[in-house]
Image (cartoon, rainbow, N blue to C red; front, side, top):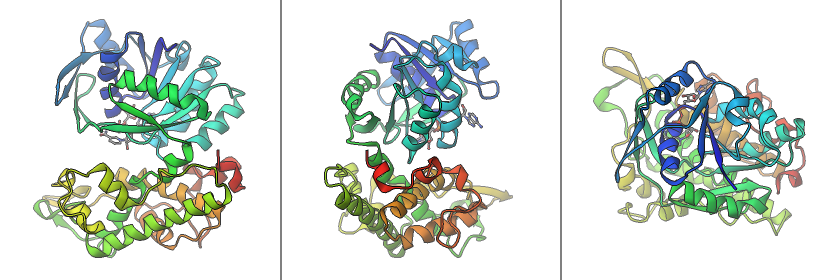
Amino acid sequence: DINTITLCGGGNAAHALIPIIRTHFQGTISLFLPYKDEAEHFQFLIREDQHIKAYTPKGVLNARPDRVSKSAAEACQDADLVIISLPAFAHEFTLSQILPFLKPNALVGTMPARSGFEYSALRLLQDHQREAIGIFGFQTLPWACRITHYAREVDILGQKASVGLAAFPHSISEELADDFTRFLGLTITPLPNMLTLSLANVGQLIHPGIMYGLFKGQEDCKYRKEDIPYFYQGVTQETARTLEHLSAEVRNVTQALQTRNPVLDLSQVISLKEWLLTTYSDSIADSSSLQSCFVTNRAYQGLRAPMKEIEDGYFLPDFQARYLTEDIPYGLVVTRAIAQLAGVQTPAIDEVITTTSRWMHKSYLERGELCGKDIQDTRIPQKYGIQDVKDIMF
Ligand code: NAD
């Protein structure tokens, strides 16, 4: 039975989760907030009998957590379920802070998981001799959400119709998906394995692929505000070709893994175009090509490329945006590492990683080897001692 849920994180996603879970769950909601003075803001809510207001298309939700702490012991020791809703770079150290205090059979996972979460989590569980703890990851965050006033107000938009969840051991995934379906008030579907989360992470293709297409060779080009390129509507035929290559390489990896292990279910790792058509069937006007699926998709309309302002009114591409700083080390680099274990060449993925890494002043791939100076800040399986492809097929 799940009586206490602990949320780790004080950003947009956590602000959305508190009122959404409160609407559907009667137990205790605890918040673990070790970062800066975030805990104090939420403790104020409790002291002053105030609530967070969440503005959703269906109305306003009011809620606050029952308990807030900077201490992992206090926030986590009675948790039955822990949801880490943080940017991927914070997953590993957050998990290592809370693990010593979790109950023997607690469940802990990330929302969203991004790629390679299971390698990092299973290694930590082993190091702490806490293998009875179940882990899970969500394929995406079910909403788009933005804090408008810290610990006070959040906008929640664009709820997905359903979101996939994978768990280890797999045997817990069905019940967990049912629990989350109740706690979140939307359909959560169990996925066959956590490898699916890594390989079917389409953000790792779309975000770096489009950044590459928009800015390769134009890195220093300054834009006026009104000239900032549209992100998805800016997909040219050439960018679409890059995206097609990235997607095809992921398919090659998937096929190589399935050849080695025919019972491994990777049926949900689909091509980018199939994914677009499934996810946005109603909002794509012209589905004849990958390019037209992006540029005629109403859901993508009007969104601009990430930029930073440099001098009065001029902008440069923002290479520190999450589209690169999250989707490369916790996305495409993990897929590249899985490809290596599977013995599959990935020239398009390598090119996108190499170019975008340079933009971020990072190095992951050096002369085709995963030995760049920043490889320790990724979640490639090799970093956790996995050298054999059979050890990722669970
Ligand atoms: P966010 O930027 O709002 O998260 C910031 C929070 O992370 C901070 O409030 C703090 O609690 C924590 N944090 C930041 N730096 C830290 C540090 N150095 N040490 C410890 N904690 C630190 O992120 P978000 O928008 O909530 O996104 C969470 C995840 O969900 C990301 O992976 C993001 O890509 C994904 N996502 C978000 C949205 C969205 O609409 N917000 C949509 C899709 C996916």
